Image 1 (tube, rainbow, N blue to C red):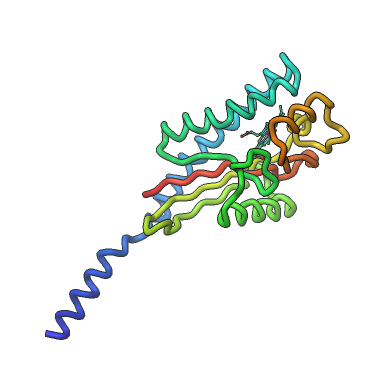
Image 2: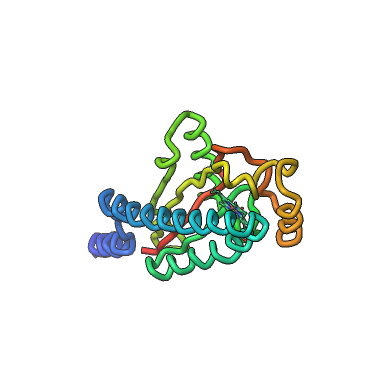
Length: 192
Ligand code: HEC
């Protein structure tokens, strides 16, 4: 009797522990996440370039402020993933990384310094989050020359850009970058 009880307890316990998705399934989810991240980067980068050329960088700040979250929201609805951009030196007050994201950023910085190609700077995993398995993905966003108009050393930035940034983001930490640095990440999560 005791033995049977023990076995049924073990069976119950095992049934409660769902197994991790296979390596193949995780790689497939990462492919989807990567495609979504690249789409976001292309759309945002394109819009930024157009607005900067047409209206100047100070007016293009609105593109980042309004369009970036809007594009991310749209992609979230399409894919069922929660998508945002975060940074350890964030401009948007909501762009603070959690522990997993901060570790990803620091890992990307090391890999970039060790010579890894920018396009390859990504990581993914499945974690337990509030009792639910959750797929997590991060891709590095690395500064190019264009980014420095709004994220560079303040002494090299235009006065109208600086004035607009101070007004919109009084606690801005996202300046002082040079080209080829990890500015932050696109981060995605999907409960499974
Ligand atoms: C025209 C000015 C401008 C340019 C150019 C620009 N950004 Fe930004 N960036 C912003 C603004 C404004 C925000 C805050 C957006 C918000 O409110 O969500 C921001 C936010 C971010 C964030 C989100 C994390 C945070 O700090 O809040 C990342 C990552 C980022 N930018 C990367 C880049 C990269 C990489 C480039 C170049 C490809 C770039 N930016 C070019 C203005 C700019």
